[in-house]
Length: 536
Ligand code: HEM
Picture (tube, rainbow, N blue to C red):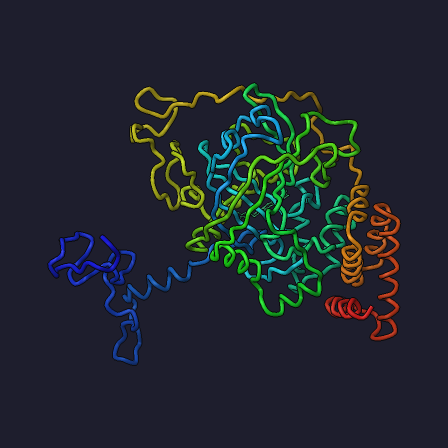
């Protein structure tokens, strides 16, 4: 039956789905009742009042009243696309099976469908895409062994290393709970009391904090994961996406403002239009590999997400590429309801002891049961493309029963000898790390909060350093002196020139302000600092 062609009772084949006078294009409500008047509610006389039994109207309006679900508590603003991942069958020059038995990587040319969602982090679902913020880069691989989510960002490191600090960090970066205004003083109050954030702040306030669009940026898993081979041996890995054919592109503050003045959705638009015109965005996936131990020879901990792994010691090894070639058909059903999580791994991939990763792993599915609902994994965008057979039943919005065709409908438990599901055969030996330590609350030993921040500062081009100093000046200008001094102290520890330039730039901004409109505060200060950024 093609859409909209067959009219019941006009000589065509009878179709039990269609009532008298109906065709495929006839409007109905969700009960299947044909709707003959979709313009007027029922009223007593043409001027009303209306009556309570206006079923069609009440159903229509009450569904509308429930159209929105809670937006993501972070990463609310996003865009998504479908595509595929193609494996190289190797990691660098070696067979990939030496390190992982994950099936999606094994064979050269093997394709796995993916769905990707890009996002900004701090502000709401309709905030401008030009904001200074990390960009989310979350990939769902629908593999033959079930789903794998690689939930990453564009930047390769993070602000904090302990998940206990995450809610405070997000609160500090969000608008003030009283005024509803963004306030750099709150952000830098938190950051100046969290020295481990110095490296991330150095990236974020440089042009790397405003990627030009989603196609011309990198991605990274940030956290340290493990790969496990058939013998159960593990290595530590970090994942990196590098854009193919297009250069990485970041924006100056001025360029971002110019775009934002005209378009709040430039990155979503850029992604959508590129795919529509057949210019499919592409990234290559690299891993860095370390043996699975503490690496006392390094001046950082391999499990610390505030650190980069040196590329000379741990080279980027290509393992495959990803192409995005299809836009979503419905933004809400796919992009908004997509649910990614760091716990979603397939056989051959494992967690490391990275504490931030372990904290994240609880948070994602917890929030998704609240945000989307108990049965969020039954939605097409989240469901694996392979078979699912569980004994999980019921709950709000159960769309179907996750039952195997041969499974007795009476047996929703395991073990059973009367027609229930059976456990799978292990795909290889379990990776079984051993522990011998006290249960403590304690920081990692090798915090080394500033050295890599200095290296990153020195690795920037001149214009990037100039932007960094100007952007930090804009933000710190409106902060209390003790916050400014702590930040200058951190930057100085990272690199004496970095600290000196921020201090000098702040002093210059303050004296320029004193000569003009007195001591600034709050939003007025931000605007004034903006203005000075233009004149100095
Ligand atoms: C989204 C928690 C750190 C990348 C989210 C969401 C939560 C969350 C609750 C919303 C998920 C949803 O509603 O579906 C946390 C916690 C973290 C943390 C507790 C640290 C303890 C990170 C880090 C990265 C990251 C380090 C980057 C590697 C993302 C991305 C999304 C996201 C990309 C959006 C996923 C999507 O597009 O749906 N995070 N996060 N998060 N997070 Fe995190």
